Image (cartoon, rainbow, N blue to C red; front, side, top):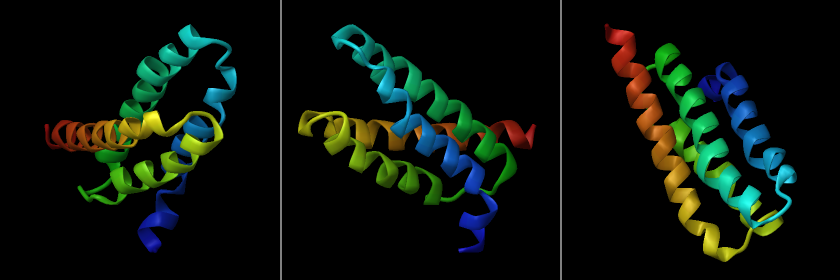
Amino acid sequence: MDKIKKNWIYYLIIFITFYLIPILIKDTGSGIFILLIVIPLITLFTSIIYGLSNKFDFIYPLIAAILFIPTLFIYYNTSAWVYVIAYSMIALIGELLGKTLQRK
């Protein structure tokens, strides 16, 4: 629980990314751009910074996945379930990349 309290800013950024950025979706083109470019990039950069300042754990990618699930019912449909896995993997890769950069 202390780790979650310590890293609340990272979770807040992911929350804002998942819940407020989709408000900008106007049509299919903007939806695809946001789902495939904007959200993954913000998730990746946040994950790298998280990895630079923390030891490796699976909590961050898990929380990213859990935070995205309700957006399926708010903004998208069930065909977007694949993004739960995709964004979780992006968070994991970003965290590992941040850990790698930290060691150098």
